[in-house]
Length: 327
Image (spheres, rainbow, N blue to C red):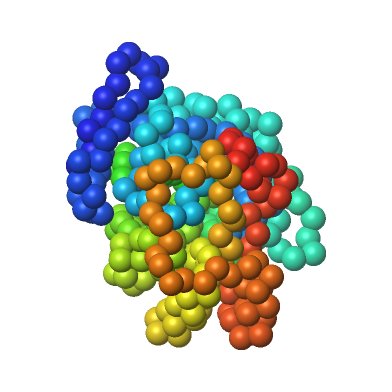
């Protein structure tokens, strides 16, 4: 388990991993709190939502030590915050985007939607909901469609900004689950970045789960929880981070073996070299005998093999210095 220590409400937190068993390593808090590394607004740099405004909630702690990890500072740095404090901070950052949503239909312009910030509430199925949420439920019943969803069941527009829980590993903290549920209830499109080493079945089905499958060069390939594949939906995404020729061959094998392209979108990222200050001593080493692959070679291989994946550059590392935090 993890040992969590804090002194004073706003004190920094210290976390020690006492066991690296993937599914036993959870925070257990009596009160509804999370250990948060940082909360900030930026552009979503990856996934099928790349380029859209996004509020990132980076949670503390991870029980993996991938060779290429660029956020090792989140292993131990953080402070304890209540769910209410986190939601208030998110609402503050989201305020400039109020009354706006964006179309996801190709060729369409952004759509401005009247999103009244009224605090009027109504009780539906025992849940506290805004007047707008009740209105949306009524519309869904009368049209057979969910708000912002087209006749094919695809999102046609979303409330801005996105909200993403990342880490670290968010699923190490059980209270991440009720936070994501509440954010979905509030009408946000919620993304979860997870390592793939933990059970994703308990995550609210409205959350868009972006799940890693760790490649051999990560040093953590044995931690992949293959049972998660059965829980993935078409709205989820699988991400591969490729750093070597052997990684690429492994990705091709997994796509074919598990028919992953029939489940959800597949993302392939290239391992961006770490800056000296990012090279944490606890990170795993790339296993011996592997051959580095360049970004150009990776892209040409994808094209040449007609691999059914979306190559993604980490947009935030192109716009800002790769080692910069909070972007």
